[in-house]
Image (cartoon, rainbow over the protein chains, first blue to last red):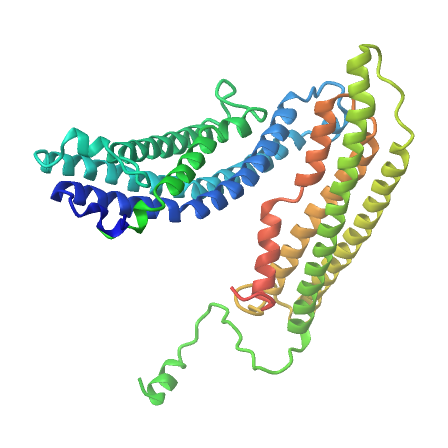
Length: 211
Length: 211
């Protein structure tokens, strides 16, 4: 079967939906390398941030009674607190810049999600249940691709917002500490990257189509 | 505006000290001395930074050894603190030697401060005025001497702190204290960010660094 002709029988609504999804998946997949690179950089920065938090925790837990160095240098603890806190601030600023890519990707996914819903409303008469749920051997059904868009939008949003929350609550022990920061930071990332890789694999032929 | 207009304006004599225009040729006198002084201070601080990072390696090894062979053993046995491992000795000696080298750098910084102060005294002696002209762009000889003095004071404090730190690092009583000592070495609490800014200002002022 010639793939170019596989969509010849599509209705106007189905073609519009497919064009939109094709455009989105192309952007999503092309951003994967950048996303992985950004995640690797973030991982290093977060490890360093976690180390700084650990230093600050040890500083606050040091028993100054009988500790000779702090007796000889009474301003030592306050100076150290200032130094470490300012380094933490710099690091947080840097990480906030790095996670902007997640925000951009979320905006893109969110926009596409709404565009898809609007197209579905616009071409309601054109789109039957079977048209949306029936795929081809090499092309997943539209409903499945729509669920991918929905999932990527949710994952990008969840990861970005939870990271912002962590960075805003660094000093709140009930939220996080130097021990759990690295684990909390990576929550949702493997699922997101797997999902994008899955999309890449399964939409390979769909993205080659001329609709 | 014509050149005639300019000559008319030049008749106005401002009481504010004016920036001296330097020709592209070699500097002489105070200018030459101050420019060389700034370069020497910069080089000394670079040497300090290199010694400090060597110190970070040594103190990290000391901390790891203490945690592994003293605190972990004590946690497992639940008894009193075991004897300090013999391998700590050479590491502490290395750290002491390093602080000796840092002291030499501070001595050199002190001699540079004296040089800057002597230049001011000489200027006052020759001109019998306390207010001197701007040397390069914004700083007078007094400002330069004050900047060098401030830089030197911070490093004097830091080296005396480090010398004390060396005495206690092998005898840290707990994991938190050894972590605290390590971060004290890394963050250099007595070298303020202002000192780094002052050095940068001095380098920009003397034309070693373009602003």
